Amino acid sequence: MIKTHPAADVPPSEPGGEPVILDRSHHPISRRDIDPDALKVLYRLHRHGFLAYLVGGAVRDLLLRKTPYDFDIGTDARPNQIKRLFRNAFLIGRRFRLAHIHFQGGKVIEVSTFRSDPELEPETESPAVGETGPESVPAAPPVLSREEGESAAEAPADREPGAGRRRPPGHPIAYGTPREDAFRRDITINALFYDIATFNVIDYVGGLEDIAARRIRVIGDPVARYTEDPVRIWRVLRHAARLDFSLEAETGRAIEPCRDLLRTASGARLYEELNKDLKWGAARPLLEMMRAHALLPILFGLAGRAYQESAGMFGRLGALLDILDHAVAAGDELSSTEIYSLFYWPWLEPRLAAAEGDRFKAIHEVVESASMAVLVPAAVRANVVQTLLIVDHMLQALETGRMRWSLRKRVHYREASRVLSLILRATPGREPDPFERLFVQKFPGPAAAPGRRRRPRRRRDRHRNAGPRPL
Image (tube, rainbow, N blue to C red):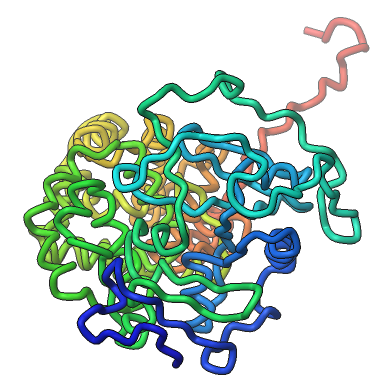
């Protein structure tokens, strides 16, 4: 390890400290492990005189010898300069514009300009060419050839409403340096940079030390950072759960005084965060950490309170989330309806067992009464109700041996069959109808086999054309 900060009283996690730098011989990152299209973007930026760093989670995962989900890039090039360099780039966002560079197969490489805290370094927007970096950026953008992997279609104009007007005073564009960009990130292990020019890993915030210690640490004062954005609490726990890391002491202690702030977060944003965890795996360890910090009632309402207070019910949920995590790891694609049906089931099951009368009404009332801060869309909730109603019929059929096979005509029958298989067999099943297999195994014989009942044949009247019958 090469340390360029000599002062012992200025640790790398302080803004005044010098970075820790790992040269190529001291880290495992190889260009062979980086997405080829990301490498093309990095090298093009570098060739035109800009800083080009692989940033964020990709560096963390490569250091841990994991496969990154995506490859994001940081640069000192301004958004319009990036647009000039890449014909297949689309600029998105209003306050901070990001470049999404599109490649064949729907792949998108995100390129962001280094940012700083606008209160610390106010700055007004200036013309794109010559802002930072070389002034010799060509007016005509170089084009990635088909051999280089660029999309064949030229990017259409992507001007936003009002993009042609100058930004009014008081709205600074807070572009900054790599150091400033590192300190505005959430946690230390996500603030590491890989420099394509030198192949060095650059650490301004102590992320390398935290990776070695297998811990999650917020950059700066945790209470202040959680207050700025309460969803950081969720992300801190997510990374600890996925990587099996511990929480640094101050990072963990600050959750309790700040956890109620999660109620003020956008329900739609919380739903996006939950989707990431249910669909990407490691859902069980995350919810276990949430339960340890008493977050379940805050995020999931009455259902969360039940999961928080009942060890048995949470154990049932944990078992289903384990099944879900294994299905995700095995490459089984589950729909949102199937995933949320599993999430609701442990809370619904005892209430459904005590319900009388209309089963649809009972399931609907239970799902709608959860009062969750996580705003599950109404369409998803409606699909869950229909799916779990069919699951309820299937469970009754496995007890009685009588099944209404007309349910096969319903839209959510297939999803219900897979959900039941996940609940009873811990697998979604590879067959077209996992429930049918379970039913026939338990009730063998032609009488139990599903299928359309044959209507009795009508007897043909042999004397139909023979005139009137004799008396």
